[in-house]
Picture 1: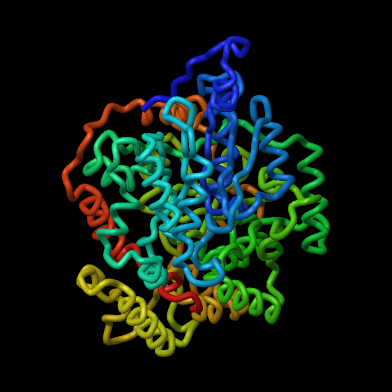
Picture 2: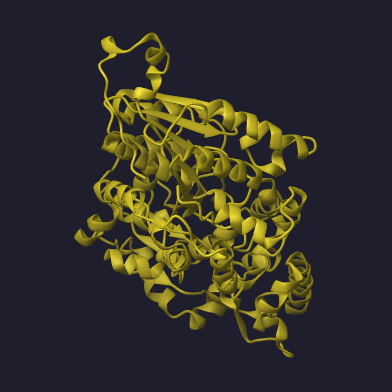
Length: 547
């Protein structure tokens, strides 16, 4: 499935050939529902310049196919990093999230068919490569299905790059999926895990790669997110970022603890605030991205209201809105005292790498699907933890248990009946008596805010014996001696731009059988479902949009 070019001298082309002259340069089409700030956009902006250099054309053209126009400053920055700077956009709202589409969904099928027919007409496997991001998230399966169909009809190479999954604690969207016409799990599987010979599936961690490889064979590849080594903003940009942060917090030279993320429930931001208040009481917790989905608005509003009511030292979504005159994320990383990553769910976790690249200490959760890959890359992360435990005396446990029971039952009803047996009640809800302590990440936001409402020293004294590792970290933080993970030499083998481009090319070149077993897509999806519905992958924060 390699993209190949036949170079023909322009002066020898017939008029008919000249009409199709644009096809003499490879069209590299990147499909994403949006290009809002976040991990997917960061991977695209880092990888696209290196992948374009590998295409067999002197003038490759990058095309962004998306539901909304990218921010102009970001697009200008991308053009500046590309060979030749040839970037154009195919923008149509029908490529956005289904939940954000006005009116009935039935006309969308025809609109999407017309969109892809118009833009893919005349393209062949020799001059076009399509790189589609996060379609496994299922936010617009009508788009994914039509893209898969039209690429198959034209034999266009299509890489489905999977960052997240629709079934991974996102069952609130299952009714939306059914309304779009996908009435069964099998119909969804045939789109998300398409076994077509022109399709390749890229996973960003081995946890996801193994089920793909087991069922789709050479059609699947492991493509860890790249991170160029030692790319740091210059001193002037770092100083400017510090001045800007001082304006945001209203305090000059205040310690900044940064969470580089969008405002999502799975980021578990209340835990980041709890750790900041315990370990660096005079510090400010700052998050970068804003709310990018209607599902997250209630979480943001509730958290923001509590922060204002209690006068917590926190600033949420400082880069939200226009990016003009705001520092870049790398500049903010370099200007911060420490980086935090308290997510309960990540596909890869770029902040693990970004902190090492910026030379800043990181405090992060040890996520079971990410930690093995970090070890393979060679990272030594000195401030990695599994859970932060809190005594139930810091919250109203009976109300929390009732709340969790209600949310879990509502979440369970969202699952197709055949899957409910794979999701037994969480152990906390099965207990007859209150536990002595509970993991903070296993609480709803309402209960997390109850814990945070206590003065920091009160909650610290109640929790320090449950989390002895924090005593050492607090001493380091107060003396600004938190440890930095150095960038290991072995990481370049996996994460350098050259390694990324080589793995991408290897995936495209893979020889695959024309046909797979009839149930290959469904088998792959079922293996994922069994894993993701296990108890370790369920958190109350993700059971309901308003916790």
